[in-house]
Length: 197
Image 1 (cartoon, rainbow, N blue to C red):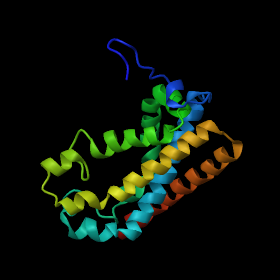
Image 2: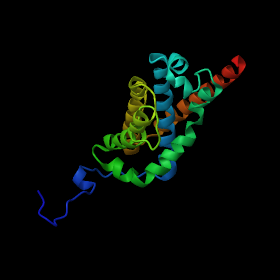
Image 3: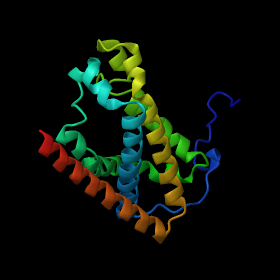
Protein backbone atom coordinates (compact mmCIF):
# COMPACT_ATOMS: atom_id res chain seq x y z
CA UNK A 1 0.00 0.00 0.00
CA UNK A 2 1.52 3.35 -1.00
CA UNK A 3 2.32 5.84 1.71
CA UNK A 4 0.52 9.14 1.85
CA UNK A 5 1.72 11.37 -0.98
CA UNK A 6 3.51 8.52 -2.82
CA UNK A 7 2.83 8.20 -6.55
CA UNK A 8 1.23 5.12 -7.99
CA UNK A 9 2.61 3.84 -11.31
CA UNK A 10 -0.33 3.73 -13.74
CA UNK A 11 1.73 3.68 -16.91
CA UNK A 12 1.27 1.11 -19.66
CA UNK A 13 4.33 -0.72 -18.35
CA UNK A 14 2.66 -1.20 -14.97
CA UNK A 15 -0.37 -2.72 -16.68
CA UNK A 16 1.66 -5.46 -18.37
CA UNK A 17 2.09 -3.62 -21.64
CA UNK A 18 4.04 -4.77 -24.66
CA UNK A 19 5.70 -2.61 -27.29
CA UNK A 20 3.28 -2.61 -30.24
CA UNK A 21 3.54 0.32 -32.66
CA UNK A 22 0.47 2.45 -33.19
CA UNK A 23 -0.76 2.15 -36.78
CA UNK A 24 -1.26 5.34 -38.81
CA UNK A 25 -4.79 6.75 -38.52
CA UNK A 26 -5.79 5.60 -42.02
CA UNK A 27 -4.90 1.98 -41.24
CA UNK A 28 -6.49 2.18 -37.79
CA UNK A 29 -9.68 3.70 -39.21
CA UNK A 30 -9.99 0.93 -41.83
CA UNK A 31 -9.62 -1.72 -39.13
CA UNK A 32 -12.24 -0.07 -36.94
CA UNK A 33 -14.70 0.54 -39.80
CA UNK A 34 -14.39 -2.92 -41.33
CA UNK A 35 -14.44 -4.83 -38.02
CA UNK A 36 -17.40 -2.80 -36.83
CA UNK A 37 -19.30 -3.42 -40.06
CA UNK A 38 -18.59 -7.14 -40.10
CA UNK A 39 -19.34 -7.81 -36.43
CA UNK A 40 -22.40 -5.53 -36.56
CA UNK A 41 -23.77 -7.40 -39.57
CA UNK A 42 -23.03 -10.91 -38.27
CA UNK A 43 -24.42 -10.36 -34.80
CA UNK A 44 -27.37 -8.37 -36.13
CA UNK A 45 -28.27 -11.16 -38.54
CA UNK A 46 -27.88 -13.78 -35.81
CA UNK A 47 -30.07 -11.76 -33.44
CA UNK A 48 -32.67 -11.19 -36.16
CA UNK A 49 -32.96 -14.94 -36.66
CA UNK A 50 -32.37 -16.30 -33.14
CA UNK A 51 -34.18 -13.63 -31.12
CA UNK A 52 -36.85 -13.13 -33.81
CA UNK A 53 -36.57 -9.36 -34.06
CA UNK A 54 -39.33 -9.33 -36.69
CA UNK A 55 -41.93 -10.48 -34.19
CA UNK A 56 -40.52 -8.39 -31.32
CA UNK A 57 -40.52 -5.20 -33.40
CA UNK A 58 -44.11 -5.82 -34.53
CA UNK A 59 -45.85 -7.25 -31.45
CA UNK A 60 -44.15 -5.87 -28.33
CA UNK A 61 -43.76 -2.33 -26.98
CA UNK A 62 -40.71 -2.09 -29.23
CA UNK A 63 -43.09 -1.48 -32.14
CA UNK A 64 -43.44 2.12 -30.91
CA UNK A 65 -39.68 2.59 -30.96
CA UNK A 66 -38.21 0.40 -33.70
CA UNK A 67 -38.91 0.31 -37.43
CA UNK A 68 -40.26 -3.02 -38.71
CA UNK A 69 -37.59 -5.36 -40.08
CA UNK A 70 -39.18 -4.97 -43.52
CA UNK A 71 -38.33 -1.25 -43.62
CA UNK A 72 -35.81 -0.11 -46.24
CA UNK A 73 -34.07 1.81 -43.42
CA UNK A 74 -33.43 -1.42 -41.53
CA UNK A 75 -31.94 -2.95 -44.67
CA UNK A 76 -29.81 0.18 -45.16
CA UNK A 77 -28.47 0.02 -41.59
CA UNK A 78 -25.49 -2.30 -42.19
CA UNK A 79 -24.46 -0.38 -45.31
CA UNK A 80 -24.47 2.90 -43.37
CA UNK A 81 -22.14 1.62 -40.64
CA UNK A 82 -18.94 3.08 -42.17
CA UNK A 83 -20.12 6.44 -40.81
CA UNK A 84 -20.42 5.04 -37.29
CA UNK A 85 -17.17 3.12 -37.65
CA UNK A 86 -15.33 6.29 -38.68
CA UNK A 87 -16.78 8.06 -35.64
CA UNK A 88 -15.46 5.22 -33.44
CA UNK A 89 -12.04 5.52 -35.11
CA UNK A 90 -11.82 9.26 -34.40
CA UNK A 91 -12.86 8.76 -30.79
CA UNK A 92 -10.63 5.73 -30.12
CA UNK A 93 -7.45 6.82 -31.91
CA UNK A 94 -6.13 9.12 -29.17
CA UNK A 95 -6.34 6.17 -26.75
CA UNK A 96 -5.40 3.41 -29.20
CA UNK A 97 -1.76 3.21 -28.23
CA UNK A 98 -2.60 2.59 -24.59
CA UNK A 99 -5.31 0.04 -25.43
CA UNK A 100 -3.19 -1.89 -27.95
CA UNK A 101 -0.16 -2.11 -25.67
CA UNK A 102 -1.93 -3.32 -22.53
CA UNK A 103 -1.95 -7.05 -21.96
CA UNK A 104 -5.73 -6.97 -21.48
CA UNK A 105 -6.36 -4.14 -23.93
CA UNK A 106 -9.27 -5.92 -25.61
CA UNK A 107 -11.07 -6.29 -22.30
CA UNK A 108 -10.36 -2.66 -21.47
CA UNK A 109 -11.85 -1.54 -24.81
CA UNK A 110 -14.83 -3.85 -24.37
CA UNK A 111 -15.38 -2.50 -20.86
CA UNK A 112 -15.47 1.02 -22.27
CA UNK A 113 -18.10 -0.01 -24.81
CA UNK A 114 -20.22 -1.82 -22.23
CA UNK A 115 -19.92 0.96 -19.66
CA UNK A 116 -20.27 4.02 -21.88
CA UNK A 117 -22.07 2.90 -25.03
CA UNK A 118 -24.38 0.10 -23.84
CA UNK A 119 -25.27 0.45 -20.16
CA UNK A 120 -24.30 4.07 -19.55
CA UNK A 121 -25.72 5.83 -22.60
CA UNK A 122 -26.62 9.51 -22.31
CA UNK A 123 -30.18 8.86 -23.48
CA UNK A 124 -32.82 6.32 -22.46
CA UNK A 125 -31.95 3.52 -24.89
CA UNK A 126 -33.38 0.04 -24.37
CA UNK A 127 -30.98 -1.99 -22.24
CA UNK A 128 -29.29 1.04 -20.72
CA UNK A 129 -29.53 2.28 -17.14
CA UNK A 130 -31.32 5.44 -18.32
CA UNK A 131 -33.71 3.34 -20.41
CA UNK A 132 -34.60 1.18 -17.43
CA UNK A 133 -35.29 4.28 -15.32
CA UNK A 134 -37.09 6.55 -17.78
CA UNK A 135 -38.91 4.35 -20.29
CA UNK A 136 -42.06 2.30 -19.89
CA UNK A 137 -40.54 -0.77 -21.53
CA UNK A 138 -40.81 -3.95 -19.45
CA UNK A 139 -37.54 -5.07 -17.87
CA UNK A 140 -37.43 -8.15 -20.11
CA UNK A 141 -37.33 -5.99 -23.23
CA UNK A 142 -34.36 -4.10 -21.80
CA UNK A 143 -32.50 -7.39 -21.53
CA UNK A 144 -33.77 -8.67 -24.89
CA UNK A 145 -31.19 -7.03 -27.18
CA UNK A 146 -28.23 -7.02 -24.79
CA UNK A 147 -26.73 -10.35 -25.94
CA UNK A 148 -26.35 -8.97 -29.47
CA UNK A 149 -24.55 -5.75 -28.53
CA UNK A 150 -22.49 -7.20 -25.67
CA UNK A 151 -21.15 -10.04 -27.82
CA UNK A 152 -20.69 -7.85 -30.90
CA UNK A 153 -18.59 -5.31 -28.99
CA UNK A 154 -16.58 -8.11 -27.37
CA UNK A 155 -15.67 -9.65 -30.73
CA UNK A 156 -14.98 -6.20 -32.18
CA UNK A 157 -12.66 -5.32 -29.28
CA UNK A 158 -10.72 -8.60 -29.45
CA UNK A 159 -10.45 -8.36 -33.24
CA UNK A 160 -9.28 -4.75 -33.24
CA UNK A 161 -6.56 -5.23 -30.63
CA UNK A 162 -5.29 -8.43 -32.29
CA UNK A 163 -5.30 -6.85 -35.76
CA UNK A 164 -3.41 -3.80 -34.53
CA UNK A 165 -0.85 -6.03 -32.80
CA UNK A 166 -0.43 -8.37 -35.76
CA UNK A 167 -1.28 -6.58 -39.00
CA UNK A 168 -1.33 -8.67 -42.16
CA UNK A 169 -2.18 -8.03 -45.79
CA UNK A 170 -4.60 -10.98 -45.89
CA UNK A 171 -6.64 -9.34 -43.11
CA UNK A 172 -7.04 -6.20 -45.24
CA UNK A 173 -8.10 -8.28 -48.24
CA UNK A 174 -10.53 -10.47 -46.26
CA UNK A 175 -12.08 -7.45 -44.54
CA UNK A 176 -12.40 -5.64 -47.88
CA UNK A 177 -14.27 -8.59 -49.34
CA UNK A 178 -16.45 -8.81 -46.24
CA UNK A 179 -17.29 -5.10 -46.27
CA UNK A 180 -18.10 -5.29 -49.98
CA UNK A 181 -20.47 -8.20 -49.36
CA UNK A 182 -22.19 -6.37 -46.48
CA UNK A 183 -22.73 -3.31 -48.68
CA UNK A 184 -24.09 -5.46 -51.54
CA UNK A 185 -26.45 -7.34 -49.20
CA UNK A 186 -27.60 -4.07 -47.67
CA UNK A 187 -28.33 -2.65 -51.14
CA UNK A 188 -30.19 -5.83 -52.12
CA UNK A 189 -32.21 -5.60 -48.91
CA UNK A 190 -33.15 -1.99 -49.66
CA UNK A 191 -34.33 -2.93 -53.17
CA UNK A 192 -36.33 -5.88 -51.86
CA UNK A 193 -37.94 -3.73 -49.14
CA UNK A 194 -38.85 -1.03 -51.65
CA UNK A 195 -40.51 -3.59 -53.93
CA UNK A 196 -42.74 -4.86 -51.13
CA UNK A 197 -43.72 -1.45 -49.75
